[in-house]
Each structure stands twice: as structure tokens, then as C-alpha cells.
Amino acid sequence: MTTPELSTVGAVQLATRNHGMPLEALRYPITPAGLHYLLIHYDIPAVDAEAWRLTVDGVVARQLSLSLDDLRSRPALEVVTTMECAGNGRAGLEPMPASQPWLLEAVGTALWRGVSLRALLEEAGMRDRALEVLFTGLDRGLEGDVEQSYQRSLRLEEALRDDILLAYEMNGAPLLPQHGFPLRLVVPGWYGMTNVKWLASVTVLDHGFTGYQQERGYRFRRDENDPGVPVDRMQPRSLMVPPGIPDFLTRRRVVEAGDQLLEGRAWSGRAPIASVEVSSDGGAIWEPAQVTRDLDGQWAWCKWTYRWTAAFGEHELSCRATDETGNQQPLEPPWNVGGYANNAVQRIPVAVRG
Ligand SMILES: Nc1nc2c(c(=O)[nH]1)N[C@H]1C(S)=C(S)[C@@H](COP(=O)(O)O)O[C@H]1N2
Ligand SMILES: [Mo]
Image (cartoon, rainbow, N blue to C red; front, side):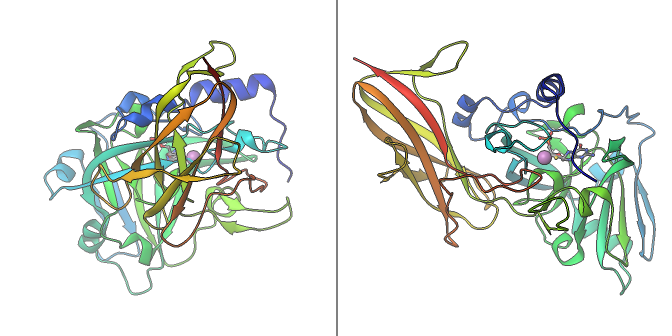
């Protein structure tokens, strides 16, 4: 099976349905819900909140069927996480893989509140032969000629981490329809596709899940015949609030000469951010930025600032993050069939006027 072509109308259709976070919103530690990016493979499903139940089944001692009130009456867990779509940066690849054409805006940070996945699994009682946990959403569609519900699984050892939750609130309010109402999975540190929205069921499996989103989608593949390896945790990335003012049509930046405070955010799903550097000459010389942790929690982005003396003329601004395991953003985009995890450094051309 080869990947279909994406027409211009097709790309515009995807881009308008699935909006990004305008990069000036990097200023907020917690992204206001309406500015958080969106990625919806199919349609937002219709949900009757009164009739809705979460089923916990599979190789468990006791099947559970829980209403939203049942979930809300259990002990609550809160986590702040930065979530990024695995396809963020895809539109910077050449040739561009046929999928959601993200530039760099497929990211956001939220405060999620819900119940601990681990506690629910323990309540249901996993059998000894439990191997994976499968999450099924209420949304259905076609992808690669396969009709499917959106489904992803996690290995049991990952699913039992104590910071994974089934969230019914985002930023202190019930989930919005587009973010998975009434309940979604939140797996801090992993790319967005893991965080299954509109949850219908959580199923403990005694075998590996081989559905489309696990075996075909979200794998690093060199070519169409390569089975590839799974996409999992977020690679380090930093982004900058675009400085100065934009031109309406081209969005090219115009900046006043003199002292400019550049700012942005950096994150990694692999390890805490160790450093952020800034370049104003297209990546030849890098200078350290100041990194501040203004949010609690290991998986939330941190803030960086850098004082730039803008000289008259044309410049290219970039920022580059390195995490504590030494992963650093590359200067050139890493290519794969699906266009996943392109964390090449952001490049912002700016015209400085005197
Ligand atoms: N049920 C379901 N869950 C889903 C998706 C989906 O299409 N259906 N998209 C996934 C992808 S690819 C991403 S990047 C995140 C986006 O979450 P958000 O729209 O709340 O930002 O949700 C994930 N969960
Ligand atoms: Mo995604």
C-alpha cells in the first residue's frame, strides 16, 4: 500500500479542521483551551453524557462500567503536561508526507484532572497474562482503506506508571468536545497520538495490539516496505515567540533595531531540558538562553529568554534545545515516510529596521 497524494484543497481542509497554537501563545505557561492545538483524525463524535459509560474489560477479574459521576467520585489526580503532535514539523519536510500539514504549531500545555489509570486497572484486577492495555475512542473513520475506531495501546509496564490519567477536566473545566469529552487518556511525555480522546473502553490484552494506528500509522519508516519502529516519546524541541510584528500575507517579521528580549518554550518527553541556545545567524554561532521552570511537573515545558541586540539588516533567528540525556535538536530535518518527529530547529527570518 502506498500513501495517497494530498491535494491543495485536501491540505487546506485538514489545516482548517486541525488548527495549531499561534506561536505568540508560547507566552502562557498553561495554554488557554481555545488556543491549544487540535488533531482529529475523523469527526468529533456525538456523546450523550448521561448514557455514556467507560468499560474496563479484557483479561481482568472484574469488568467495570463507569459513569462520569462514578469517575468524578474517585480520588482525583492532576498533571500538567506539554502535548505535541508527532506530525509537528511535517510541512518542513521535502517531499512533504501526505498528512496533516503542520508547520510548528502542533503543541500546547494543559492542566489535566481525572482518575489514575493504574488505580482503575487495579480495581478491575489484571490477570497474570496481561500484556498491553488498549484504548478505544468513540470516533470512527477510514484510514489507509481500513475502517476503524481510533485505537492505541500501551505496554502494561508503561500503562502502570503513576502519572497516567483518564482526564475529565482540562484547565479546570470539563473537556471541550474537540479535546475528547467526556474522557480522554493523558500519557505525559509521549507524542499526541497516545492520548486517546472520547474514550469508550479500556481493554486489558494478553497479546500485542496490531490495529492500524499501532502497526501502520505512527512508525518511523524509511520507505513504504519498511515495517519501521514505533513512535513514542517526544523529541526535544524549542520554539520562539515570533519577535516584532508580522506582515499580514507573508507573516515575515519586522523588528526594531536595538535591545530585544526573545522568549519561547522548550520541552522533551525523554528527559528534562538541560539547555536552550539561540542563534541570530542561521545556526553558525549559538549563545546560551536563560531557562526558567515556571510550571510544576516533569513533563511541562520550560520558559527561555535571550537578550538580543538587533542590528539593522536581515537575520535568521533560531533556537535549539538539548535535554539531559544529550538529545539535541538537529539543524536539518530527519525524514521518514510519515513525517514524524521532525524536531529540526525553528528558523525565523527577520528584517531589522533602524
Ligand atoms: N479518539 C481519538 N483520539 C485522538 C485522536 C483522534 O483522532 N481520535 N488524535 C490523536 C492525535 S494524533 C493527537 S496529536 C492528539 C491531539 O489532542 P488535542 O486535539 O486535544 O490537542 O489526540 C490524539 N487522540
Ligand atoms: Mo497527532
